[in-house]
Image 1 (cartoon, helix red, strand yellow):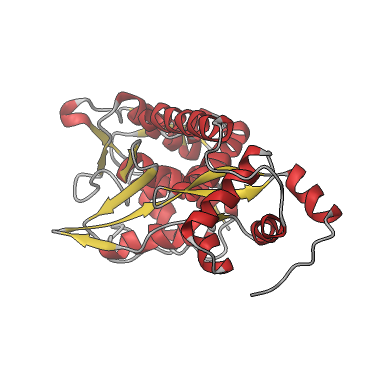
Image 2: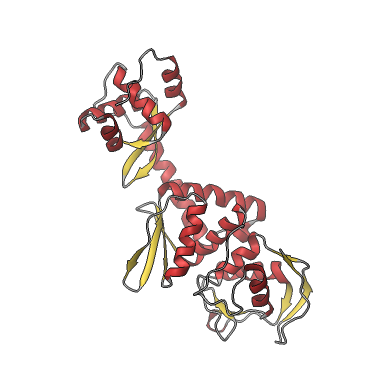
Length: 310
């Protein structure tokens, strides 16, 4: 999947040190997805990146793809003029029209995990809103076909997302709590490997702050003294631990699975939290999601209680 440049645009933009060969990699994929997010490329061959840091990242990605260039940066209306040869390259590499018509999505089948993450990085940078109160990233687009592509990328990466919904003229979906946590880990791996060129630009500090806030909130919850707990561990507590060992659950889900009252589920979780046998690892619709700790797993293995399936 390589493409060697044989000709240049006849515009005044000059590529001084062209790179050979041009390959599909996280940088080129990230650059492509900027054209499907914030900005325009119709007729004028340009893209608009309003924040100075985002413009800088955009410049860097183009030059890392094509090589050093002259006469191509413009400050008028915050526009960035693009060498037309770039559209030829995208058309060849990703099987998209040279016009980059947004009605036809680029092919993502066969792209590596790093390339998919890079595509989502550009998407969040251009179209994402990081919500600090609800612990979610909201991605919005007028074009439903393109939004479906963003949604599919999240599903391929196994990120927890909501369904696509329509709000007036726009379509939107959310990357939920555990999707954000996984995305943040993947994002940091990409940054360590490729550098800050593949960070979130002006949104990177926002996401860093959100993750720090989440970590502080979880520490407060797990170190808080539980209310309404029992002194001794009973058989029902071991049963709750065994359910939580297979999959993290909320209190309501534990209540439903074990067919016990809300009050008893509250006491069971309180008892296990107080003894550091379970911990809260996140949130689902504002409810605490609990997981068994290493100490809890050890207790399960040494327990003489038999597990009763309900």
